[in-house]
Length: 295
Image (cartoon, rainbow, N blue to C red; front, top):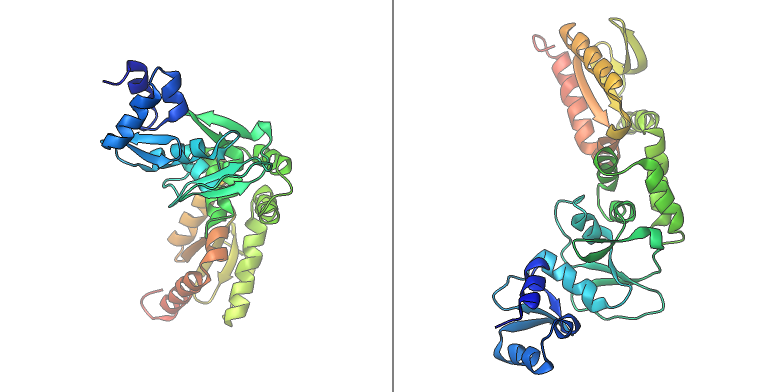
Protein backbone atom coordinates (compact mmCIF):
# COMPACT_ATOMS: atom_id res chain seq x y z
CA UNK A 1 0.00 0.00 0.00
CA UNK A 2 1.39 3.38 -0.99
CA UNK A 3 1.43 6.18 1.58
CA UNK A 4 -1.49 8.53 0.95
CA UNK A 5 0.83 11.47 0.32
CA UNK A 6 2.63 9.52 -2.40
CA UNK A 7 -0.66 8.50 -4.01
CA UNK A 8 -1.80 12.13 -4.03
CA UNK A 9 1.40 13.30 -5.72
CA UNK A 10 1.13 10.58 -8.35
CA UNK A 11 -2.53 11.42 -9.00
CA UNK A 12 -1.89 15.16 -9.36
CA UNK A 13 1.33 14.91 -11.40
CA UNK A 14 0.26 12.83 -14.41
CA UNK A 15 1.46 9.69 -12.63
CA UNK A 16 5.05 10.93 -12.34
CA UNK A 17 7.07 10.86 -9.14
CA UNK A 18 10.78 11.19 -8.46
CA UNK A 19 12.83 9.02 -6.15
CA UNK A 20 13.75 12.01 -3.99
CA UNK A 21 10.11 13.06 -3.64
CA UNK A 22 9.00 9.54 -2.72
CA UNK A 23 11.70 9.43 -0.03
CA UNK A 24 10.60 12.82 1.31
CA UNK A 25 7.04 11.51 1.59
CA UNK A 26 8.00 8.55 3.73
CA UNK A 27 8.89 5.71 1.37
CA UNK A 28 12.09 3.77 1.96
CA UNK A 29 14.70 2.96 -0.66
CA UNK A 30 13.76 -0.70 -0.25
CA UNK A 31 10.08 0.05 -0.98
CA UNK A 32 10.93 2.06 -4.09
CA UNK A 33 13.36 -0.54 -5.43
CA UNK A 34 10.84 -3.28 -4.71
CA UNK A 35 8.23 -1.61 -6.88
CA UNK A 36 10.77 -1.24 -9.67
CA UNK A 37 11.87 -4.87 -9.37
CA UNK A 38 8.30 -6.20 -9.54
CA UNK A 39 7.37 -3.92 -12.42
CA UNK A 40 4.78 -2.07 -10.36
CA UNK A 41 6.66 1.13 -11.23
CA UNK A 42 8.52 1.78 -14.47
CA UNK A 43 11.59 3.97 -14.83
CA UNK A 44 11.08 6.86 -17.29
CA UNK A 45 14.48 8.42 -16.54
CA UNK A 46 17.08 7.99 -13.83
CA UNK A 47 15.24 8.67 -10.58
CA UNK A 48 11.91 9.43 -12.30
CA UNK A 49 9.13 6.86 -12.19
CA UNK A 50 5.60 6.12 -13.36
CA UNK A 51 3.22 3.41 -12.07
CA UNK A 52 2.87 0.61 -14.61
CA UNK A 53 -0.91 1.04 -14.68
CA UNK A 54 -0.61 4.68 -15.77
CA UNK A 55 -0.30 5.61 -19.47
CA UNK A 56 2.83 7.42 -20.65
CA UNK A 57 1.03 10.54 -21.83
CA UNK A 58 2.57 13.62 -23.43
CA UNK A 59 2.07 15.43 -20.13
CA UNK A 60 3.84 12.67 -18.21
CA UNK A 61 6.70 12.67 -20.73
CA UNK A 62 7.22 16.42 -20.43
CA UNK A 63 6.95 16.47 -16.66
CA UNK A 64 9.41 13.57 -16.39
CA UNK A 65 11.92 15.15 -18.80
CA UNK A 66 11.98 18.44 -16.88
CA UNK A 67 12.44 16.61 -13.58
CA UNK A 68 15.16 14.38 -15.02
CA UNK A 69 17.05 17.37 -16.41
CA UNK A 70 17.67 18.52 -12.86
CA UNK A 71 17.96 21.87 -11.06
CA UNK A 72 17.09 24.92 -13.12
CA UNK A 73 15.56 22.93 -15.98
CA UNK A 74 12.40 24.30 -17.60
CA UNK A 75 10.18 23.28 -20.50
CA UNK A 76 10.71 25.50 -23.52
CA UNK A 77 9.55 26.18 -27.08
CA UNK A 78 6.62 24.14 -28.41
CA UNK A 79 6.50 22.06 -25.22
CA UNK A 80 6.00 25.18 -23.12
CA UNK A 81 3.51 26.66 -25.61
CA UNK A 82 1.48 23.45 -25.45
CA UNK A 83 1.67 23.36 -21.65
CA UNK A 84 0.42 26.96 -21.51
CA UNK A 85 -2.51 26.03 -23.78
CA UNK A 86 -1.30 28.12 -26.73
CA UNK A 87 -0.36 25.25 -29.05
CA UNK A 88 -2.96 22.56 -29.72
CA UNK A 89 -0.58 19.59 -29.82
CA UNK A 90 2.72 18.81 -28.10
CA UNK A 91 5.91 18.22 -30.08
CA UNK A 92 7.00 14.63 -30.70
CA UNK A 93 9.55 14.82 -27.87
CA UNK A 94 9.86 17.25 -24.93
CA UNK A 95 11.82 20.48 -25.38
CA UNK A 96 13.82 21.39 -22.27
CA UNK A 97 16.37 24.08 -21.43
CA UNK A 98 18.96 23.82 -18.65
CA UNK A 99 21.37 26.43 -17.25
CA UNK A 100 24.46 27.02 -19.36
CA UNK A 101 26.82 25.77 -16.64
CA UNK A 102 25.11 22.37 -16.40
CA UNK A 103 25.00 19.29 -18.59
CA UNK A 104 22.23 16.75 -18.89
CA UNK A 105 21.70 13.84 -21.25
CA UNK A 106 17.98 13.05 -21.33
CA UNK A 107 16.72 10.21 -23.50
CA UNK A 108 14.10 11.22 -26.07
CA UNK A 109 14.23 14.93 -25.27
CA UNK A 110 15.61 18.00 -27.03
CA UNK A 111 17.83 19.68 -24.44
CA UNK A 112 19.32 23.17 -24.89
CA UNK A 113 21.83 24.88 -22.60
CA UNK A 114 20.95 28.53 -22.05
CA UNK A 115 20.35 30.80 -19.08
CA UNK A 116 16.72 31.95 -18.87
CA UNK A 117 16.04 35.27 -17.08
CA UNK A 118 13.99 35.02 -13.89
CA UNK A 119 11.24 37.08 -15.53
CA UNK A 120 10.81 34.33 -18.12
CA UNK A 121 10.66 31.39 -15.72
CA UNK A 122 7.42 30.25 -14.16
CA UNK A 123 5.56 27.19 -12.91
CA UNK A 124 2.33 25.86 -14.32
CA UNK A 125 0.56 22.82 -12.85
CA UNK A 126 3.73 21.90 -11.02
CA UNK A 127 6.04 22.03 -14.05
CA UNK A 128 8.80 24.60 -14.52
CA UNK A 129 8.28 26.29 -17.90
CA UNK A 130 9.42 29.40 -19.71
CA UNK A 131 7.01 32.31 -19.69
CA UNK A 132 4.05 32.43 -22.02
CA UNK A 133 5.74 35.18 -24.06
CA UNK A 134 9.06 33.39 -24.49
CA UNK A 135 7.24 30.17 -25.35
CA UNK A 136 5.37 32.01 -28.12
CA UNK A 137 8.57 33.52 -29.53
CA UNK A 138 10.46 30.22 -29.42
CA UNK A 139 7.60 28.31 -31.01
CA UNK A 140 6.88 30.79 -33.80
CA UNK A 141 10.33 30.31 -35.32
CA UNK A 142 9.95 26.52 -35.38
CA UNK A 143 6.66 26.31 -37.31
CA UNK A 144 6.30 26.43 -41.12
CA UNK A 145 3.54 29.04 -40.64
CA UNK A 146 5.05 30.64 -37.58
CA UNK A 147 3.75 34.11 -38.41
CA UNK A 148 0.16 32.83 -38.39
CA UNK A 149 0.80 31.22 -35.00
CA UNK A 150 2.21 34.52 -33.71
CA UNK A 151 -0.80 36.40 -35.09
CA UNK A 152 -3.22 34.07 -33.27
CA UNK A 153 -1.20 34.36 -30.07
CA UNK A 154 -1.47 38.15 -30.24
CA UNK A 155 -5.23 37.86 -30.65
CA UNK A 156 -5.76 35.47 -27.74
CA UNK A 157 -2.85 35.13 -25.35
CA UNK A 158 -0.54 38.12 -25.06
CA UNK A 159 0.29 41.72 -26.01
CA UNK A 160 2.93 42.93 -28.44
CA UNK A 161 4.86 45.01 -25.82
CA UNK A 162 5.12 41.92 -23.60
CA UNK A 163 6.51 39.88 -26.50
CA UNK A 164 9.01 42.59 -27.35
CA UNK A 165 10.20 42.78 -23.74
CA UNK A 166 10.67 39.00 -23.59
CA UNK A 167 12.55 39.14 -26.89
CA UNK A 168 14.95 41.80 -25.59
CA UNK A 169 15.52 39.99 -22.29
CA UNK A 170 16.61 36.84 -24.09
CA UNK A 171 19.13 38.22 -26.57
CA UNK A 172 21.33 36.90 -27.98
CA UNK A 173 19.65 33.57 -28.69
CA UNK A 174 19.27 31.12 -31.53
CA UNK A 175 16.48 32.37 -33.82
CA UNK A 176 16.58 35.86 -32.32
CA UNK A 177 16.98 37.59 -35.69
CA UNK A 178 13.97 35.78 -37.13
CA UNK A 179 11.91 36.67 -34.06
CA UNK A 180 12.90 40.31 -34.50
CA UNK A 181 11.67 40.29 -38.12
CA UNK A 182 8.36 38.74 -37.11
CA UNK A 183 7.85 41.28 -34.34
CA UNK A 184 8.68 44.16 -36.68
CA UNK A 185 5.99 43.00 -39.13
CA UNK A 186 3.52 42.46 -36.29
CA UNK A 187 4.13 45.99 -35.03
CA UNK A 188 3.08 47.53 -38.35
CA UNK A 189 0.16 45.17 -38.82
CA UNK A 190 1.60 43.87 -42.09
CA UNK A 191 -1.03 45.42 -44.38
CA UNK A 192 1.35 47.58 -46.42
CA UNK A 193 3.87 44.77 -46.71
CA UNK A 194 1.08 42.37 -47.75
CA UNK A 195 0.12 44.72 -50.58
CA UNK A 196 3.72 44.87 -51.77
CA UNK A 197 3.90 41.08 -51.59
CA UNK A 198 0.79 40.79 -53.77
CA UNK A 199 2.28 43.13 -56.37
CA UNK A 200 5.49 41.07 -56.44
CA UNK A 201 3.47 37.87 -56.83
CA UNK A 202 1.48 39.27 -59.77
CA UNK A 203 4.51 40.71 -61.52
CA UNK A 204 6.46 37.51 -61.03
CA UNK A 205 3.64 35.45 -62.52
CA UNK A 206 3.18 37.67 -65.56
CA UNK A 207 -0.46 38.47 -64.74
CA UNK A 208 -1.37 41.92 -66.08
CA UNK A 209 -4.42 44.15 -66.34
CA UNK A 210 -4.59 45.25 -62.72
CA UNK A 211 -4.38 48.62 -60.96
CA UNK A 212 -3.79 49.59 -57.35
CA UNK A 213 -6.18 51.69 -55.24
CA UNK A 214 -9.13 51.83 -57.60
CA UNK A 215 -12.17 53.89 -56.53
CA UNK A 216 -15.50 52.16 -57.11
CA UNK A 217 -18.97 52.59 -55.57
CA UNK A 218 -17.72 54.94 -52.89
CA UNK A 219 -14.86 52.72 -51.74
CA UNK A 220 -11.22 52.18 -52.57
CA UNK A 221 -10.29 48.69 -53.78
CA UNK A 222 -6.77 47.63 -52.84
CA UNK A 223 -6.13 46.05 -56.26
CA UNK A 224 -8.60 45.65 -59.11
CA UNK A 225 -8.91 43.96 -62.47
CA UNK A 226 -11.51 46.39 -63.77
CA UNK A 227 -12.33 44.65 -67.06
CA UNK A 228 -13.04 41.33 -65.32
CA UNK A 229 -14.54 43.12 -62.27
CA UNK A 230 -12.31 41.23 -59.88
CA UNK A 231 -11.47 43.09 -56.67
CA UNK A 232 -8.66 41.93 -54.40
CA UNK A 233 -8.65 43.08 -50.79
CA UNK A 234 -5.41 42.71 -48.85
CA UNK A 235 -5.33 42.20 -45.09
CA UNK A 236 -2.44 42.40 -42.67
CA UNK A 237 -2.29 40.48 -39.41
CA UNK A 238 -5.66 39.79 -37.80
CA UNK A 239 -4.65 41.03 -34.33
CA UNK A 240 -4.03 44.52 -35.73
CA UNK A 241 -7.55 44.95 -37.14
CA UNK A 242 -10.08 46.55 -34.79
CA UNK A 243 -13.86 46.06 -34.84
CA UNK A 244 -14.51 49.36 -36.64
CA UNK A 245 -12.15 48.54 -39.48
CA UNK A 246 -13.54 45.01 -39.71
CA UNK A 247 -17.09 46.37 -40.06
CA UNK A 248 -15.95 48.85 -42.72
CA UNK A 249 -14.23 46.06 -44.68
CA UNK A 250 -17.40 43.97 -44.60
CA UNK A 251 -19.50 46.89 -45.83
CA UNK A 252 -17.09 47.52 -48.72
CA UNK A 253 -17.06 43.85 -49.68
CA UNK A 254 -20.87 43.56 -49.59
CA UNK A 255 -21.26 46.72 -51.68
CA UNK A 256 -18.84 45.45 -54.31
CA UNK A 257 -20.47 42.01 -54.47
CA UNK A 258 -23.91 43.57 -54.89
CA UNK A 259 -22.50 45.71 -57.70
CA UNK A 260 -21.32 42.62 -59.58
CA UNK A 261 -17.70 42.42 -58.48
CA UNK A 262 -15.96 39.15 -57.64
CA UNK A 263 -14.09 39.86 -54.39
CA UNK A 264 -11.03 37.93 -53.21
CA UNK A 265 -9.33 38.47 -49.84
CA UNK A 266 -5.75 37.51 -49.02
CA UNK A 267 -3.94 38.13 -45.78
CA UNK A 268 -0.23 38.48 -45.11
CA UNK A 269 0.12 34.83 -44.15
CA UNK A 270 -1.39 33.47 -47.38
CA UNK A 271 0.79 35.76 -49.46
CA UNK A 272 3.89 34.70 -47.53
CA UNK A 273 3.27 30.97 -47.41
CA UNK A 274 0.85 29.97 -50.19
CA UNK A 275 1.77 31.84 -53.36
CA UNK A 276 0.62 28.98 -55.59
CA UNK A 277 -2.78 28.92 -53.91
CA UNK A 278 -3.15 32.70 -54.19
CA UNK A 279 -2.31 32.66 -57.90
CA UNK A 280 -4.69 29.77 -58.51
CA UNK A 281 -7.60 31.65 -56.95
CA UNK A 282 -6.80 34.84 -58.86
CA UNK A 283 -6.57 33.00 -62.18
CA UNK A 284 -9.86 31.21 -61.49
CA UNK A 285 -11.58 34.51 -60.71
CA UNK A 286 -10.19 36.14 -63.86
CA UNK A 287 -11.32 33.21 -66.00
CA UNK A 288 -14.77 33.48 -64.48
CA UNK A 289 -14.88 37.20 -65.25
CA UNK A 290 -13.95 36.57 -68.89
CA UNK A 291 -16.56 33.82 -69.42
CA UNK A 292 -19.88 35.13 -70.77
CA UNK A 293 -22.73 34.59 -68.36
CA UNK A 294 -20.48 33.96 -65.35
CA UNK A 295 -19.23 37.45 -64.61
